[in-house]
Length: 280
Image 1 (cartoon, rainbow, N blue to C red):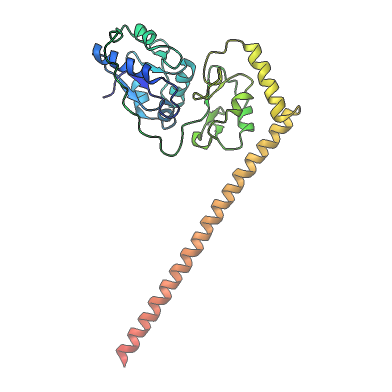
Image 2: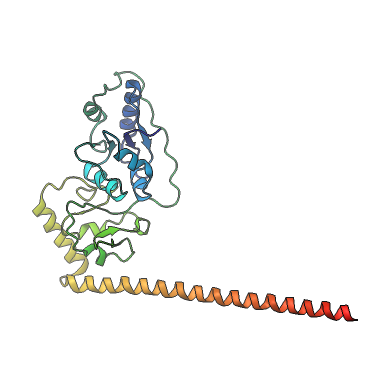
């Protein structure tokens, strides 16, 4: 069932307390309020799951998940931007079920009544959805993250804007690019520390001073030279990968030609043998 209200279980990181999820689901069901319980909002965003676009089109898109800044930009990444005039984003990672239900106008399950256990999310298989999310309201397109990352996570859109192009290429539990973003514009929703996890930026000056310290520690004082060197390394790897792909394609074409030639030779020998037997 698709509704305009979605609750994230945060199955891959467990950042939303089971008691909170249980209270939310029990109270909403008792009130007759339909909702969708999804295993992991980050994973849906990375896959551009159509459920997110459906939520964004609802008259009152409502998302119960983690920090508002993270959720808003996850939907934007999924090409399902939320209208700030219509959307209600409730943080149940740090906030309580009672607070969220109060905002929704839904009575909390009566004290002493059994709290419904949230359904178990599917066991994570393979890739863990850990990746950066760009806060478009803060990003100035300086492209420092693009020059810093060696794993091909970022590229440029046709309009020349930095974007997260390959979330699966990110290294799990590494928030390094967020630590050197001069505008505090890179979010890792599953990280434990604010504002990297999408929490509010409470002290701009303090955060930017910390970022400069981290940047100097990671790259040294000659930041631009180091970033240029990293960009060259990224380009070298990209070109090498392309050369390997071309070489592999050429090798396959050669094998195919050899195989066809061998087949044709076998057919000629068989045909010659058949003709020889027919005249004997």
